[in-house]
Image (cartoon, rainbow, N blue to C red; front, top):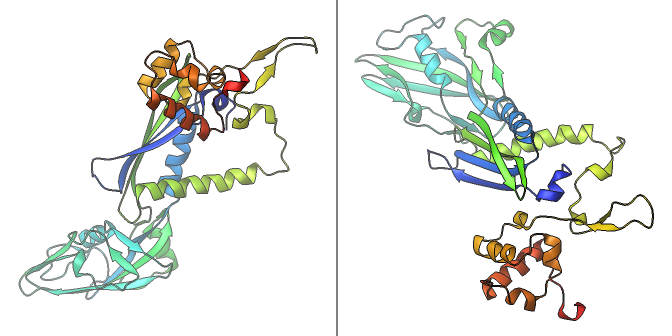
Length: 331
């Protein structure tokens, strides 16, 4: 991570439900981040989420008595184009990579929806109420629908060049399960630093995977490329990469061996104490992690407004970072 994270602490990752109120729509927040990293991370994740996640889609259909998409069928209210567009919007989950042909049959009068599709156990229909076509009295229809699993966008024109069969109508396929991915950044502050950022990432999927799973898949995909670029053969300057084991250590600022050593100062705000505990520490003059680790339990207990609950909070938080309060016999 960026060397600044040593000063401001690890970014906090959280999520909250979106307007749909289920796992397919969530808003993720991560911060604080170094200046510019909100845009860097948000844009990279958004592009991957919209273009590179696997999903299922209808790629073609074959309708009895129809030779091309502009044909009409007696007793069917919709044209071939309308039916193709309705099939294109189907929300499906497919578990294997194999291509599968499903069927849709019916006799009017009735409205055929996604729940009327005859599918195997390998395909799950996620929007059973989605309308596909309407049959009038005396109308009859039989459609063979090809479902594939893929990535990105597959235009019908390209597949039509490879397989131009009479009666086979190719459909533009959008495989991505992510329906919406947007992000924004806002200012964040830690201690005296006011130039930091917080990233808000909103993800909405079609239900074939959760928003959390989409983010994890996108992050792992990016990580695989970054690890390739950052192989061990590359040379990095370790002094400019964050190492959280150095938090609380001393850094030399002199030009020779006789120079004085200045203690590092890490704001206690990055420990995310409760407001009551944080105010009690700051009012007592404890403003850094280094100062806090020099305090004893007895000294903290004497602070105004600092009780047993606050003491337990401090001890637990320090322990999470491998730190502790000073022992009484060390003072």
